[in-house]
Length: 340
Ligand code: WQD
Image (tube, rainbow, N blue to C red; front, side, top):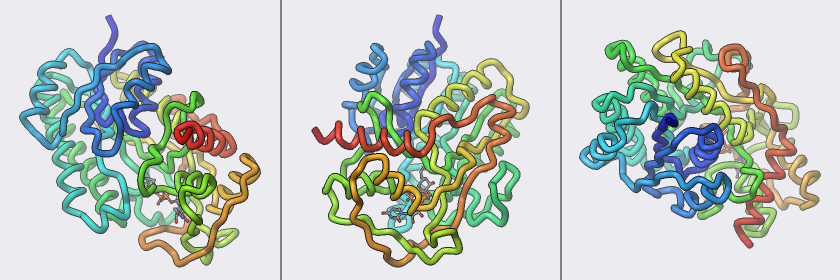
């Protein structure tokens, strides 16, 4: 009998890569997704990669009744991984209520519906943005969290506080919050990746769209930071490495190996790359010369963010394996494949 995992937002970028790894680790997967920032085609692509068609249910988790119904139907699941959320930092600054309503109502309905149906294991898609402007680097899980610079980031921090209160009151309920640094890259098949539709949110899709001419020029937001080349430094991590960490966290909870009702793990490589490092690596990897221009800093950006990876290594036995070259090559292959 396979263990069943419910994956909310499972048609999204990180969710879909995680569903592939779960299926390849012999889990039965139910995807709940409202397709507000993803496509149903992703379900077929997961089928193409794994040979298994996951159960897909189109539900808006802000709808409490629909959410309760779907969790009642799948009360034989053992665990929920919750990816479903809006994630565009800039948009969240412009439309904070949209982010607080969507990200928090979805979270509250999900954890309420699952615990009402006896599903008491929860993995949360969090973000390094909960650390705000860190006082020291590298960032460990003990680094003090601060008020994030965006409503998007604040919904992640508030979610972790909700989980803290819940696991303190409901001793049946266990959770792991995974704090991602900068996920980039795509599945080696070229069938899954960061959706290239519309205006990208993050650096990598801007680079690949500038490289293939979808956008005229890459704007580099500031080269006057206190870093080696003046551009901000981030800890880029391959989305497949991230997905593999989720499977390990699932097994940790199902095998009751967790040491506290709520655990936090940074998921990064521990290596910081500047924007210019990424641009140079892209040009060397693909042979494509990027058209870019230095402009003003972007509000809310911090000079440097990179992870201490020791806790995930020690407790999960996980470390990221893929380097920047592979992250970039897979992103470029995805962009070319999806546009052909
Ligand atoms: C990276 C660097 C930009 C675009 C955010 C969220 C985080 C996570 C990842 C979801 C920065 C620079 C970018 C461009 C640029 N979100 N940049 N030109 O802001 O580090 O993190 O996305 O999981 O929670 O906070 O990522 O990719 O937007 O930016 O110069 O066109 O690239 O200034 O230094 P960020 P990013």
